[in-house]
Image (tube, rainbow, N blue to C red; front, side, top):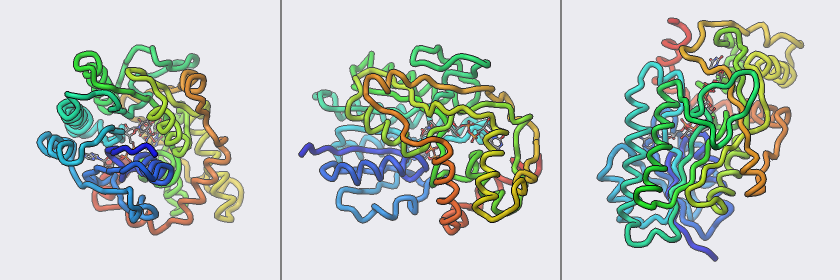
Length: 352
Ligand code: NAD
Ligand code: DAU
């Protein structure tokens, strides 16, 4: 049995918790260290089904603390990193760019330095896997897809901070020969997503008969991937990706925001026993996001051809599963809505 010590950062968040669960369950011979500072977006409840497993360990720590990252690498001798910890919400990056610079850029460099120093005598068998976003490529017009060679053109403080971290990861590969892989994924949806993002926010508001805020005319397009399909792609890339390479991950599943919300309303009407068209009455068009990217769409053919990955779920199935999960986990939703989120919500939607 292959033994590994894997540091997964941001494992208490949305995607990170699914990645931690997959690795803990599927690879009992790997020791999984979930490092998370538990910001408003981090929630250990996401992992309560696996947190007693012998190969799971939690470390509460902040990646912006450089000395601590070095100490932790010395202490635990990690042989690989899957780096997801980040500030992840575009709207928050518009109001507080500096936090995104600190966490997403400085935090990533701290981890790169800690890995480089810990692995300096033996890089073989080591891996720094950086999880990034399709937003680094900018905004598409009506046609075309982002490929791994599309030039970077980030347009929000969030995407710029992620782009910067991608560049730094590649710089450490070229300059210090650090073994790295990067993946850039499209919009994820599914269980455990914090209700500031479009789909869980809309589910929560529909359930509570609150308005569904649609930015601008709702014509912006996103490509949606079920979160567990992202986790399986990360598994494939972690195990079979080539050193120094980048892989795009997408759902082949483009929706305008307004069509997506109509679809969601239809599912919610059926689940909540409401008349057809009832939930859609909650749709409210609000002021557009500043610098709102028009369209994201991703070409994941490299990942599909080279590593044999493909998304497992059709959107119709994924959105039903997601709605079912939120309706069955009311307590999770109530618990996660912290004081920080209440004030963010008021600032973002009520005092707009
Ligand atoms: P999330 O906001 O749900 O979770 C982020 C996690 O990082 C939280 O648990 C938080 O506590 C932790 N964290 C934040 N700052 C930290 C710090 N300084 N030190 C330690 N931990 C810290 O985010 P997510 O949606 O799960 O995204 C995870 C990663 O995937 C991010 O890097 C994001 O850029 C990337 N990504 C997200 C999507 C998406 O659709 N959500 C798509 C593509 C890529
Ligand atoms: O593409 C990958 C990215 O997807 C990730 O890197 C980000 O971490 C993740 O947050 C997501 O970014 P988006 O900005 O696309 O996701 P969000 O859910 O915030 O918004 C989706 C679309 O819905 C976008 O066009 C903005 C719009 N929107 C969003 C919110 C929160 C609304 O119309 N109303 C809203 O209230």
